[in-house]
Image (cartoon, rainbow, N blue to C red; front, side):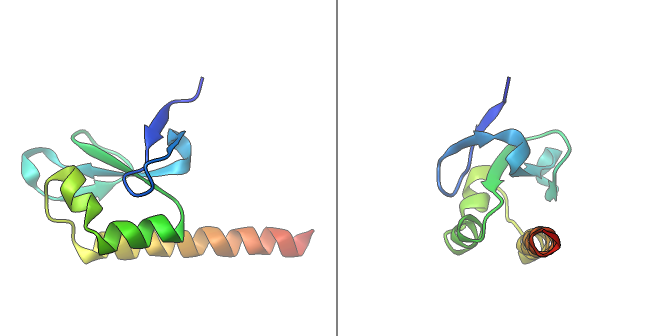
Length: 93
């Protein structure tokens, strides 16, 4: 049974394994990606959702804490790695 979560950008329900999880650390000590306990926000692993969340400050509102630009850069890098791995798989076929 899939665990569904809602993307904070496009508001679609998606299986949790297909989303990035951003967690606010206890005590408002910042945010981290993927693991940890605390308030969480989920984001689709797509360029439009990432750009919308960055532009409209959706992660900040959902987590109620300031989100550094480095978090968005890390997610963009992950997106680039995922896309390059996908294109390499297509070229192998």
